[in-house]
Length: 449
Image (cartoon, rainbow, N blue to C red; front, top):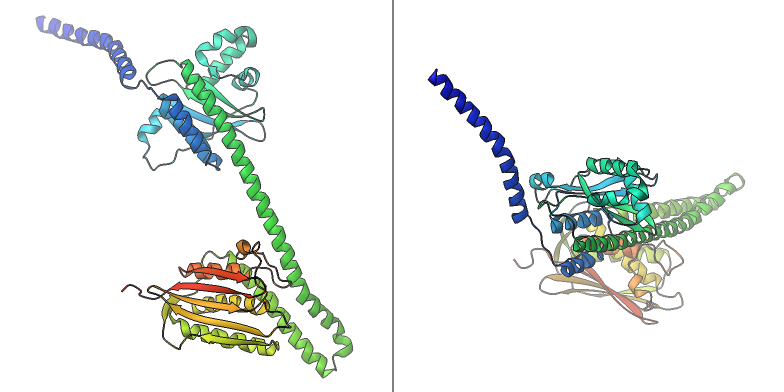
């Protein structure tokens, strides 16, 4: 009996300790949170940091994440949710951070966004649009006369979904564009006047950053559309010309098919026109391609330049152009790593550009030189054409920019891309009425070894 009594006393004591210890443990935990999680911050330093960082951000997702992280870290909150307005009126979560997520998240792991939405007709939205103030849950009873008990209780229920203790509105052009739903502080402290002022300032700066990002996005889109429009007009013009020639000759076939000269001319015109269209399409594909190399091998750049010049000379003879070439280099072996077909394309673009810059009433001279230094080989192409005006120099390598009546303005842009894909670069010097020099600089093979 004594043994049973002793056992019962032990059980009773254990239960009593558990009952007494649990509230004690909670009180100790609250005390620890207050002591170790109490946050203090330099108001002006935070504002300066937020202002300077947001000023350089042009992506909405980065703005949301930065603003959310700052508030979460600086104030020591249990959670932060950012909800952005959607076109149909609802507000969707675009950023989320909570104490649980923060502890389980790796430093390099992005914040995950959950598909949580709230209607534009909720009590929270009604409150923010009407009061234009930060919503503090503990202060809601003071708004009962203004909104009514039913709305206040609805707001509390809505905040409960997010474990929210405060909501910060972000207005852009008088429209509620973003909500920051804040959980309570880990320390258990309430939001101070300084906290409210900081949140208002961050809200204002976030609004400016979002508006700037949207304007920047619209500007980029407008420029892209303008570029597409310019490209379309250029291609339409360039493709229409050879197609017109083909169409004209095709219409004359029934009448002049027996004419041998006509058939020969028709054959030449069709081949030339198709080649011209094919070249335009190839240029566009080359420029839009992320990787232009077909294959890299060891090349003697002197041989590549020689073969290119011979090809251009043949073309000029067929076109009966009065242009002579001066080779300012010796037949020596200079090896580079590259794609010969692409390098020849780049050289042809530069040389053709120089030939086209020379007026028909002028005896054309094109000088080609090859020069070495310790690491690179330079290929210079100098013409005695009209030169490039100072205002056009910065735009020489822009796609679809051209001062000529033929072509779509992709030649130099493609050349620049080819040379850069070979780890090289291009320089240009020009004088009006005197001529232009393009210099292609490429790294030599095994330099420094």
